Image (spheres, rainbow, N blue to C red):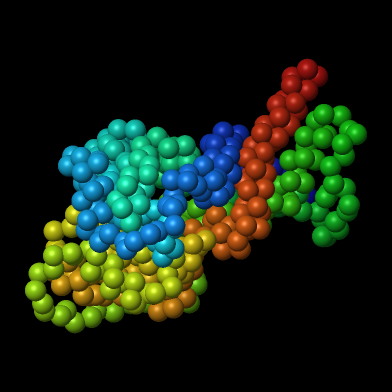
Length: 382
C-alpha cells in the first residue's frame, strides 16, 4: 500500500515537472542537437575562407597582420583576440567584440561581434563575418541563455535543467518494476497499438535508453549555470576541498621595448609548443601590460591545452598552467565542454550526443501527447 502511494506521488511529480518545463526542455534540447556538428558544418561552409593558397613567401609579422585587419574593421571595432594556426595553409582568425552589461537581450547586450579571416602571408582579408548574427552563434546563445544576457538567461536555463533532471529520475523510478522483475515489453515500442499506446511506449522506451546520455548532458550543462555545482563537481572529482593551485609564475626578464610585440609573444609561445594546433592570443586591450595565450594542442578538443600570460613589454612568459599540471578536479571541469558536446570521444561521441539531444527533445513532446489524450478521455467519460 505504501509503495502504491509512493509510486502515485512520483507519477504526479513527474507529470507536473514535465508539463511545467516541457517547452523549455524541448527548446534547450533541440538547439543543443543543432549545435552538435557546428565545427564540421562551419568548416565545410567556410572551407575556402579558412584556407590560403600554398604560401610562396614568408609570413607577415603578427603585428603587421593586426594593423591590416584593424584598418579593415575600423578603429571603432578594436581587436580582442587572434587565432594563429600551425598549418601554413590556414588563414588566421581575428575577432572584435563588445558587450553592454546593462542591456537585457542578446541582440542589444552584444553591441558588435566581427570575425575576420586573413591570409598570414600577404594580409589579404579573405572573409569578414558579422558573427553576432551568424547561424551557429545564434543557436549557441539561444541554448546558452535564451537570447538573454548571460546573468539573466543562464539561470533560467540552469533551473530548467535542474527540474528536468528531477523529471528524468522520477520517470525512471515510476518505470522501475516491483522486485526488479523486468520484461521485454518495458524495452519495446508496440507499433501496432492505438496511438496513445504508441506515444506512451515511445516516451518510456526512448527515455530509458537515452537516460544515461541525457543525464550526463544535463549535469555537464549545469556546471556552467551554477558556480556551486561546478564547485561540487570539482570537489567530488578531486576528493578534496583544496582550491586549485595558481599558475606557476615565471620571473620577468628585463629588456628593451619591442617593436613587434605580438609577433615576439607568438614566437615565444610557439617555441614552447611547437606542435600545438593553434595559439589563441587574447585580452589584447588590457592595461596591465600583459596578454593571455591559450594554447590548443589538438584541433578536436579544448581540454588538451595550456594557459599562459606574457609581458607585452618584453614578450617574456610570466605564468603557465597546462592540462598535465591540473589536479583531478580541475581536469574534469576543463573537460566539461568536450564531454558536453561529445568531442571527447571524437565523431562517435558527437553522434551519441546528437541522438541523445534529439531523444531529450522528444520526451516532452510525447509526454504531453500522452497526457493530453488521457485528459480528453477522462473528460469524455466523466
